Length: 446
Image 1 (cartoon, rainbow, N blue to C red):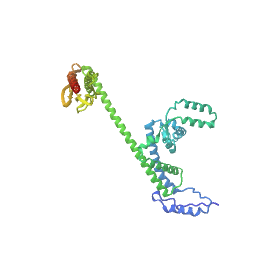
Image 2 (cartoon, rainbow, N blue to C red; image 1 turned 90 degrees about the vertical axis):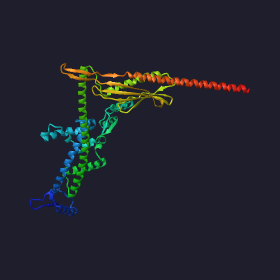
Image 3 (cartoon, rainbow, N blue to C red; image 1 turned 135 degrees about the vertical axis):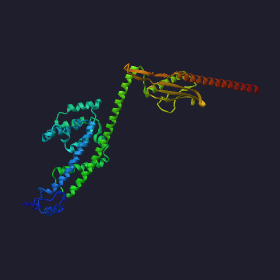
Image 4 (tube, rainbow, N blue to C red; image 1 turned 120 degrees about the vertical axis):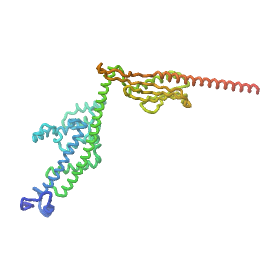
């Protein structure tokens, strides 16, 4: 026996979903509950009220799914390129794309000439792919491993054992990283909550997409979950876009600076070539001053190389700083005897003068020497009659005073050595006198 129950309104003007009929929902469920105990099976043929609810939920789910697919696509393209789905690790996804792409293009001819790969895979398949691992491109080169691979390949002759051989080969590759952990997690504030929300979203999507029944309570719960999930996606997209925009802005600004620098250097080469001068920037002027310091240091290091009393430490590289800098020290054991300082004032404008001040300071702040090295930058101007650049100021380095620094340091070293020799003689003479006195006392006592 079969009983058919139809519940609804007498006329076709039914209430809209904006004025949801809660009484109708309670009525149909009450009738179902009262009858289901006495009947073998209850088959729900159709439910217009449930369809209204599904339509509202599916609209939100549709938006959320497309936002999720767009986010996944952005991240994957950014890290793997437009053909990211062709990687060997994504072979299942590629097969699904190949199977469904023609149907998608045939169904909507206006979009037949775009890349539809993003729309041809199931949401589950897409999420499984972005949570997979990436492996190295090469297997281990260990000879023992190579022997085992060869043995597996040649000994596997039955199709049912082929999977075991393939699994063995797959395990020979080393895992590099997990896609989700490396490229997606950085944009997601609460990964565990996102994952829980994603699981609920996929379950809700499948329920509504497959025309399963809904009541008002289920609709409200699904809408709440979907709104929350869309919030996670929007925040992740915002972070991704913000980071990418920052990188793009930096790259653009850097490209502009590089172009300006290239144009400046190209113009500078023309000016220098036509005028026969050098117009140096701060780095090149500093390099000239560093060479002066190195020349002074080399001579002093040579003087002290075989000295058993005095030594000089390693040179400190001169920096483009406003403060005075310690360049090197002459010492005796732990005692510092002489320090050499440098102070730079660099102006890389055309025709400007840059100065390196060298101060040599002995013990007790003795002013051993203070000299200046000057560099004058080249300057040129365009001559209309000559139709070329002509020199206004020739570049020059006046480093003659470095010889005065070398001489002052050398004299200081000689003075220290003389003092050491004098002190050594006095101590030796005092020791001889003490010995003579001791010897006389011994003879007298005898």
